[in-house]
Image 1: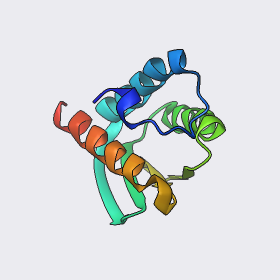
Image 2: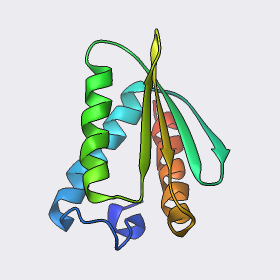
Image 3: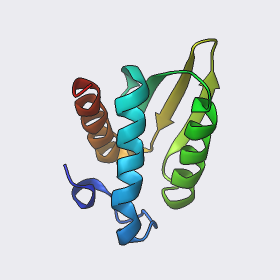
Length: 111
């Protein structure tokens, strides 16, 4: 799935910066994703394995993403051995969350 196929018009990240950003998310998911769940149609919960620097990596990536895609609401919760990343969107951006779920699941399967 290419980034332009699912990135909404409301994303303000310049087009040339989108592939590297998608690659950052893909790398995080491929390296750290342990589980994902969809608690509701407008929410996604990702559990990432913890370790040195993981919380900072997630928080930094989330901060940059929130800066260009204000329709995302991110919550980062740190546990003893994991980092939980909850992502929520409004109804207008449900398709973006669906695409993120598909992309995240595909990354998890490739591990």
